[in-house]
Amino acid sequence: MTTSPRVPNAELRKLLAESGWTGQMLAGAVNGLGAENGVTLRYDRTSISHWLSGSRPSPQVVDLVAEVFSRQLGRPVGPEDTGLVSPAGRALRIPLPREPVEQLVWMGTASTSGQDVLRGVTYSLTRRGALPLVGTSPPAGGRGRIGVSHAAAATSMVSVFSAIDMAFGGGTGRVALSAYLATTVAPWLRASATPKVRARLNSAAARLCYLAGWMCFDDMLQGAGQRYYQAAARLAADAGDACCYAAALRSLSVQAHYLGHRRMAFLLAEAAMRQSHRVPPMEAAFLTGQLGVAAAAYGDSHAALGHLSRAERLLHRTEGSDAHVGGYDVAALAHQQAEILDAIGDRPAALRALTVSLRHRKPDQRRALAITSARLAELHLSAGHLDRACTAWSVLLDERPNLTSGRVDRAVRSMCAHLRPHSNHHAAKALLKRASAG
Image (tube, rainbow, N blue to C red):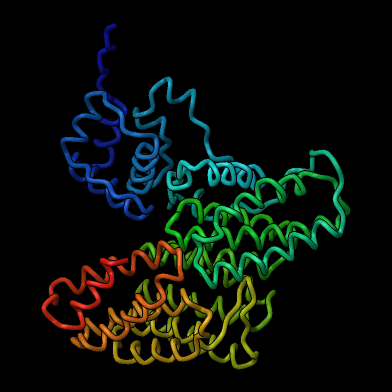
């Protein structure tokens, strides 16, 4: 049996020339996007030379290559445009659908396949990928008819999955929620219903998608989280659910900010803020606070402080809320305040704000306690306070056994990286030992 000769990849060479990148620069961009999506890659210029000569990486890496070129060139570049998809691979490729109900089925199937397929869904910064498409969903075409009880059942599951997520982390209930959306909610969305029941079901489905997006985000499945948030926005718009629609946009902004995409975070926060007149003061406060965070990261400190002040005034008009979608309270406000103050260079005030946030967290908010303590530790260490940093990081390790969360795992890895240069310090040494023991 003979092996077909490799054909040089002219399409990839053209994209490299258009982008102005060297092979090493492309490799670095792909490695960076892999890290953004929770995948460790170690490509170099030799790898790119092999691709130019006709070899092909895995389908997931091809998607990453397409996305980095899309970002660099400012136009959509599809996987097939890279020359890295083989004819056989093109025939087998099953793209993620764009219609919300079909997306729920695709991602639910991917979640339960046992092959970690969702980790291959790439977070997209292209405008088409980052901003949710809003419009009327296709008419129901499935069999059967649903009633009030179906919408009520879906609504009741919002509190169930929210409680699991808050107590144990996004990785605990993520697969179960994806399966529920795919096997139960999606068929209901296709079924016939009265307009009133349809609106109630779409609203419940939007809120479940919002939770699924949050769980994926927390478990470092950024591409899947983005798609769930987008589905939530579309379903909420169809239902006339302004609170969930705004919350989905705000969460997309939070995600973009977390990943370091400042401009996109700001654009999404602005889009969410345009809904503020349609939501109660508590939800409006959350939107306003996130716009402040995004503005501070984008370099507009004056606007950021103004948004923060307005968020505080709005929150004071309410009693706060731990609602499953869009809940906001003093702890959340203080956390946003810390992010803004740190971004504008007032680290002492940021440390005080994080301390306030922790003081107002409830004992069952384990993940929030862990993540906020980790951030507090990093700020203490950057200010030269190693002992205080170790005290805060010990809270992270105290909460870690209770949580299945990619963000918490990432915080532990970051702690270890920060503490290794101080491994002779007794408290740092003890924390490194605890971390290695799991």
